Length: 180
Image (spheres, rainbow, N blue to C red):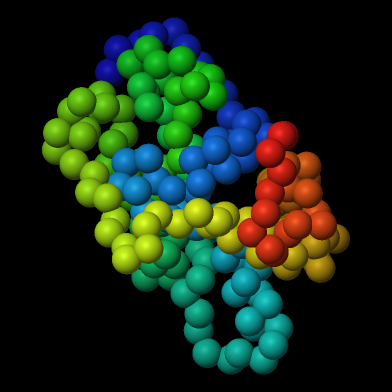
C-alpha cells in the first residue's frame, strides 16, 4: 500500500445518510439490502424490555457472527469506490453503500480486481428490487426517540442526522423527502 499522504477523516453523518438513502440502502457490490446497526441495538433492547428472557443475536458492537449474524454480513457501511489509500478522493462522488461483508472483502482493491473476483449477481425477486427499504432507519428513529436520553454520542448524532434527512411526519409510511 503506497502512502498517498491523505489522512483518513470521518465521513460526516449527514453525508453518510445522503449516500445510504441515495443508494436505497442496497449494497453497491452484492446488491443486497443492508441493515442499520444502531436500529438492531434498540430493537434488541425493546424486545428485552417486553419480557424476552432468552438470548438474542440482534446486536454486538463488534458485529460478531455468533452474536449478531445480520450485522456480520449486512451491516450498512459507507465505502470508498476507489480506496483512499490508493489515491481515491474522500468525497460523496466516491462513496457508496456497502454491506459489511463486501466492505471487508473489497478492502483497498481496485473496482476491476474486486468485481473480477466477486461478480455481484442481482438478487432475483419475483417483484424486483426493493423500492422503500431504509435499513431500519425509521425503526431506529422510533425506538431511539422513545429513549432519547439514553442515546450515546454517535447514536445521538445518527438520530439527529436521520431526523434532519427524513420528514418526521412520514416516518414509517415509506415516503421520504426529496431534498436534504
